[in-house]
Image (cartoon, rainbow, N blue to C red):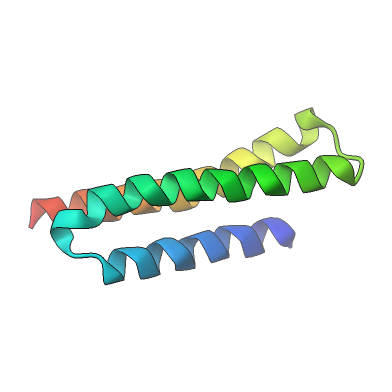
Length: 83
């Protein structure tokens, strides 16, 4: 459930960021978002490991939490440059 919440929060944040940005600035916004989201995911990784999960257990989940919103942001930025 926590994984789904994090993915949905990331999608919501990237959606808001892209909506607020002008089409010309969306690539930069996507890059800044990806760095900020990486920090959030690393914090979540540290939290999971402090609760007894191993890196091998956490890493695939955190990769998914990171990849879905960042890929969505990249797609939205790419789509904005096509129009």
